[in-house]
Image (tube, rainbow, N blue to C red; front, side, top):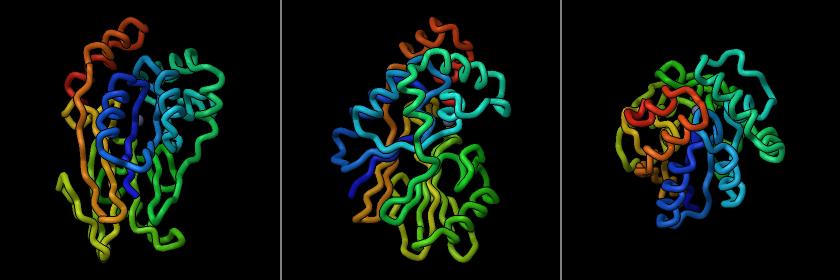
Length: 244
Ligand code: ZN
């Protein structure tokens, strides 16, 4: 099996279409999304529609749970909160129901997919300490799960753990060792924050135990125009140009 793994689309239809087109040329068997289909940008319904139509398996992100009305955005920063309320107002009832019913995590073929941290949608994996906590949780899962894919930070990253020691794995093409556990973040499709404005995703080749990082250019200017026209905060448009 070859999986394309994407995350944090955030209502950016231009980025999602560019990534989807690139994935189409990469001979994958399945596309997985690690949450946050909506929030921040101006095309929430269009993004949910593509996810449904393309049969993308998806888990729930913190923005999906707030925008669908399942939870309130009390712990969100002012920009994110404003975007949640805008998105809630514009999402169709059908799409809200779709978002509300997404699972919080899924386990397939020896790996787990989650949004923020294992068993906690809102918590970030940023530093070594967060990673170590999650490697511990990974170890406690049944069926010897050695690999976890997560999103939420909008920064692509790969970390491994062997005998309690966490290491960064900076390769664009990463060969997975049987002796290590891994936590891998594909970065964000719709609002990258690693100072590269292009959309980010990965392909996980289960047979060859290989993870490859990809970027896709997209029409940032059109996405920005829509954000401004929608009356969403202008900072949400400007940040897309610099990828942060
Ligand atoms: Zn996000």
